[in-house]
Amino acid sequence: MRVFGIDPGLTRCGVGIVDVAANRTAKLVHVSVIRTAPELPLEQRLLAIGTGIEELLDEYEPAAFAIERVFAQHNLRTVMGTAQISGVAMHAAAKRRLAVGLHTPSEVKAAITGYGAAEKKQVQVMVARILGLADLPKPADAADALAIAICHAWRTPVGPEGSGGEATDAPSSRLTPAQQAWHAAERSTRASVAPRRLTK
Image 1 (cartoon, rainbow, N blue to C red):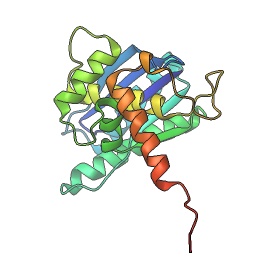
Image 2: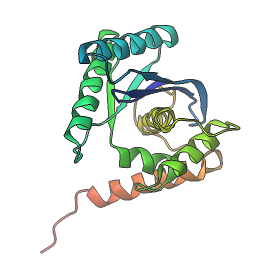
Image 3: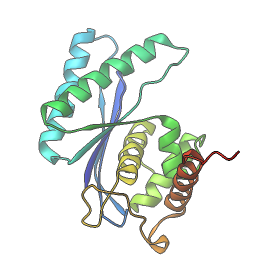
Image 4: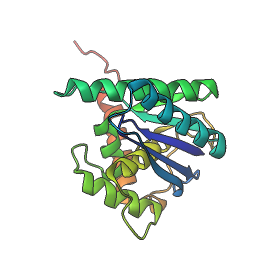
């Protein structure tokens, strides 16, 4: 499955594209950062980033699209810019009939490192390890976009044929430590929310 990941930002918008096999191994396809200058009018910045995203979508033809879920911050201006870019990105995906997966930063960190409060450097290190890269992906926006794409692929249910259906656990020998931790956390979560029979 080819996944297109977006780390939304008005000044720097990270884009990461990965191919993920049925055994959950991932390979780098593309990584970049679309930049806009703060002095440009807002509508021109949105247009530039939207055009860049659409060109990459058409070039790489992903099967899935994932983006970081916008969450509240103290800096309202930053939140607004992130939300605006998220809307532009989701519009581009919807035009191509791609379902959009939304993942919080803590979900992405947990998927990649096994720890939901991991530092950015830890995420970069694990992304490089998962993708077999010699160097850490930089800047952080690029690494985050790759992490979002990988997270989405790992969290998407994959059936026996590798396309939908009930999720199946890959043999643990094929999983990285982060993937093993993620699967363990998923199993624990499912167990904790499973309906319990009331006893008198």
